[in-house]
Length: 478
Image (cartoon, rainbow, N blue to C red):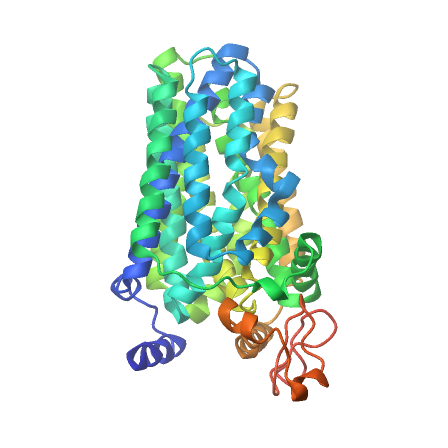
């Protein structure tokens, strides 16, 4: 622990954490392996289903809908499902949701299912995604600290993009032969992921003890109040909701884009794989290079220029370039997104008190997922009436203008430091066993009101004020 503290001080002084430091912990290695396995299988299945729907319907809108169905659960129950993750041990939530997804995906393999039934089952499968991802997000700051957390997040998100590259290419290839084979492989990855978590991730008490729970809706509302009542959390949420609205479009329209006249059947398959893989490839390069080579303080300053660059990079599609040029533009967009997302994510989880990370993750992830689904559906519907290059080009120009307005209201660095210090000073909720023992107050306790459930409690000069979680002016000001 002493070596870890010394390392944290060195990283705060300017040097970024190394990959060796991040992988030094056994827990992170197991967590990383689990995430990589499930993502690879998931993207293989998603690409295969997208191709299958487009070939059967020849509709851009329905093909986009097949791609966007995985985002819909976040709109219907994402915040509620992520709040559940704080009521149970994080590792147990991840294991159970992996096993549920394994069983549901295997049901999709049953022969003779119509497309609508397949999509319905896949939708039910993705209902397990919010609690699984929320548990992992809340677990990360407990496994990694300091700049190791930022670099670890860059590694995980870069790996997700690598899974997209390999998964989309493999999924498109498998779909030409047997789409159900992709789904069987997906189910197998969920099973192995559950086993890896069981063997390598330490059991921890639930973040919310049983006697401290409220109604699920109220706990979920607390997450919204915390995010929207804290200026730095609100700023991060708006930014990470806005950028993916424009970065996701080339992937969502790739199948239809590649199917435009002038290409042979093999060329269309290659063009689709190229467009779908380009943005993740740029993200991998950006995540690894920015996360490993750029100093922590400089990474923060690059958030705003990268945010504007992401949609602006796709604006030249207005001129209807060839698929290789489209891929280059999408790769630049992916690089820019990688330069800001892990840093913003790291700032977000560090500025959250323990016990609120899963539900706050639900707030921010729901906005991201719903926004991406809306973007793919909206551009797909527009592309049924207008040329795809025109749709993507004007959509991206509008995005650059919108994000410029967003980053103009970005808080100063002192405000982020103050929020992180206040979150660190907030007392952690007691383990479930201790909370149960404390449920019956003694004579001295009876006269003193306890902390109100659902509101972050703080102590000393680094407190959260009553306006909804903003750091007090005593911590620091912009």
